[in-house]
Length: 396
Image (cartoon, rainbow, N blue to C red):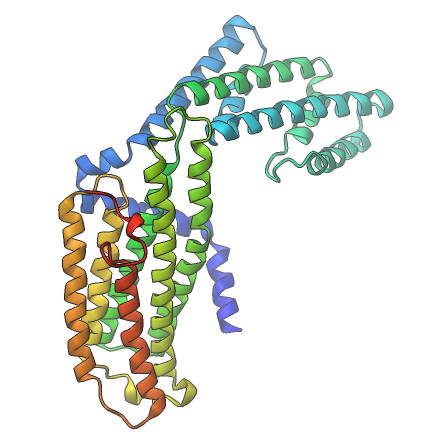
């Protein structure tokens, strides 16, 4: 029950947490990569921002000075709604926008003609618009049908043609620019998301290492387990980012050029998911130990040998190195650093195996074995030479 309450509190304030997490991740990347390398990794995002801004200006100019539309600002809105997705998705989104506006104008005109302009008409217009949105299988956030109906209700039936013209201008420019001028690829965006998640796994492993070294308790162990579970849930959705990246290349004339990079991103998502699962197991073992679950000694057995903390610090370095290799500007030195880190971890585990007490308590022996095995599995997942996810690493 306490876990459910904690999760509810975590979900209650996602906007602030996302802003804080995003800012922290950006600053960390800038420090780790340096300004020049960071700017290279963000080149795609900067390019798409400039392109979208230019398309909005063009749409507004055409609507205001060529077509003489009374509300030209609605044309850039159509551009934003259309260009916020992949090139292929912009065709689908554009068709949805046009269809929604046509349906909204038609429904509003009929209702006003039958019932006049009153509160009942407005209520029926909104309800009918929402129902039609679902019947047309539009995304839940697409409320163009009721919004268009409300605008026609407020500004008069003649506004319907102007609204449709605005949408056609915005959607047409959005589709043309998205298809012809540097189509958004989303491959780098997916890789950056994986890099950020790997950095957060590195932070978690380092916090666990510091806690074991400086003194830890049940509340700290529960916090580590909660963070590991949250990261695991986020990694379950990382496949969606890889699918979006694949979708973004469907209409790209250069899709073969990015096929290798796309395969790397998909494999990196699987690799990180497996490694996160093992880190969660490790956190669960520590939480069970300190809580005295399953016959474990509780706080009396919490004084683990120092190499356990050293091993977690090594895993933190490995996750950090894996993150650097996903940003698209990795060097051979970054890959060599990961190999060196994994070798350090193997040596540390040999020391740890020799230091763990030969206790007669079967539950504690099993837990010590699980700790060793989880650490070894994480290093195996992140191994670019002998691990199961060689394709997750760039060819350098």
